[in-house]
Length: 147
Image (cartoon, rainbow, N blue to C red; front, top):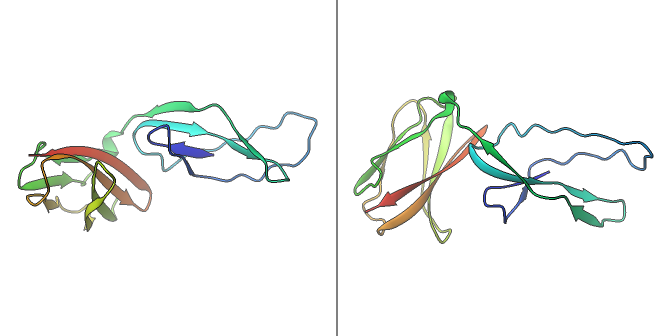
């Protein structure tokens, strides 16, 4: 099973061993427990014994954020500091990355969700940035504007 945030670039999220040759219909199920909120795209990659593979049609799924996993980012747009309220996330340590729209990592921070971290963004150029929040069982991508 492969997942994509954009519908273009996919990453493998799970591999299920096939049952081999069969004359009966086989069904497989998979729960993407680490799926981030938002519009996601999935496809299957089916590989035969010789290594040849085919992809299924792409399907989209809109995952709603639950109240228990809401991340608040403010102010947006930001000029000097960006506040992240991670207090509704599961207890743990999170890696925060600020990524430019051309894919460059501009900053990286390690934080816990027991406080509201303030990120210094005053040195960033004006524009739109992605904010990636990654924990043990959570990956979220948000955007913000730097003025």
